[in-house]
Image (cartoon, rainbow, N blue to C red; front, side):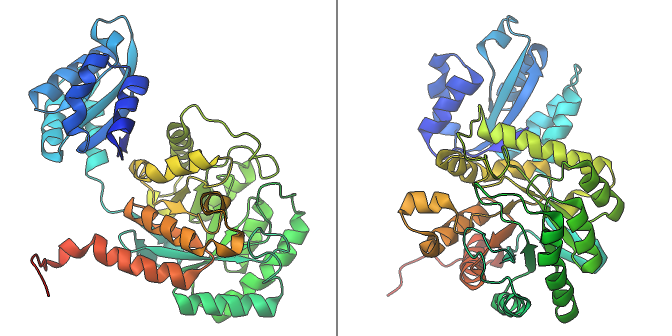
Length: 406
């Protein structure tokens, strides 16, 4: 299950009609309540669905279920719960007293709405990032062909100078990548990737205390990078390679798991989803659960929905609109919109003119709950995020001034 935030009434009505399949005549009943907390449960049986519906109404909130579940002509289906937090807690208390597996559903609902603020930890370094504070991951591509800065930092001297600059500008993590994952990119031989990345990681570790992530999908590169001083594995394939899984489990290395449909050479050839949010959510949740079952904690895993990796412009925009849905997985969300083609499509500008679009995407993502921001332009995004943070948490200072000022 995951939380849904609708941006428009039309979007909410379409969801009720198409995804939940309610009777058309009841759609107007939800109009005044759609801006409250909305929780989507993908599948319950018709007995559970009817009891949830009844108890929700008794708690003075709403629950939408498919038409066929009401008269038992449909065995199972989704449920959409709509209400304020206080009344949803009342519903949870009632469901805990019910049979038919509803206690377990109630416990999942309770966990969903009462999660502590997310954190991202690097245990070996004793570092803990509280996700109420934005975390900047500065990009260091030591490649000749990356879409934005290919060839700019593929000497040791230039790479180290860039790292020093990003640290000065406020980076919290340095992400080192030796293989381009731009659309259409060709694979890089493991020895070439090692040659590009390991020397710079060794030098960064000698000179700076900052956490280092290795952007790779190759287990051998990840292993050597960890030995050279890297702290995090950032894998665009969500660590599906068995040897990568084994490495992460054995080392308990913090990891970034990203969703990608297809692979870099072909991922932008007509990407298709029946339910882009549901499919990415299900994939990332399964990958997180796998590593949690094998000894990692949720706060050692970051999840990345993979903006631009096997997605159309509309897919990317949908992900941004529903980014907070991924928070219920339990791990912090990383977002990497920096200078990507969706910005170029919107603004009709080349790569070197996408800074403002990147900043806008980063700020939106932070307000929607994202924690880690993988960017090229560290200073600009750091400053923008500091302002966004001040706005987002201004209520907590206790200082609220309302009135007219000259």
